[in-house]
Structures are given as C-alpha cells and as structure tokens.
Image (cartoon, rainbow, N blue to C red; front, side):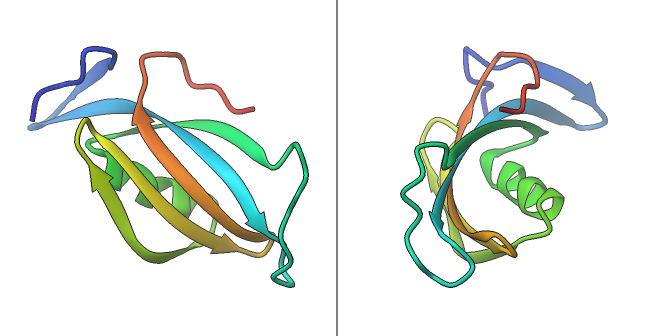
Length: 103
C-alpha cells in the first residue's frame, strides 16, 4: 500500500508506520442515554501500520471494547464503535501528518 501524501512514516523492520488522527465522538453515557454535550468530541493521534491497527491500538489504550467490525474505506480511513466504562463512542480514523496531540 502506498503512503498517503499527507502522512509521515517511520521506518520499522519490514513495515511502514503512519500517523492517524482519531475523532472520538461520545454517543451515550454508561446508562445508555444520549450525550448532548458540546464537548463530547475529542481528537487523538496514533501511529500504526494501517487504519484498522490504529483503531485496535486506541481501543486497547482506552481499555475499551470494540463493538462490531472496523469499517475500512479507501484512503486509509476507517470508522468504528467502542464501549468503555464512560459510555459508547464512534471513532473516525484518517491519515494525518501533524504531531501527536490529544485534545
């Protein structure tokens, strides 16, 4: 697979690591009620070989559970849903070239 034009890569043995931006949107609280908080969106970065690996690394870091499959799209993009002790979230994953930032 070719590296996206906006992505940086780091050399590792036999593989390429890309930087991905993850938009995490809070959908429901632990009781299942919809979250309507304007601050219900956060942004993260993850270095991984592909979008699916970025999701799996993020889910592990968040000590969460992946709900269903990781939906992969052209251009190294993906969408997934996860659940942890704070509720249910959607993740939108896309390549990025920026520094690692958590907001």
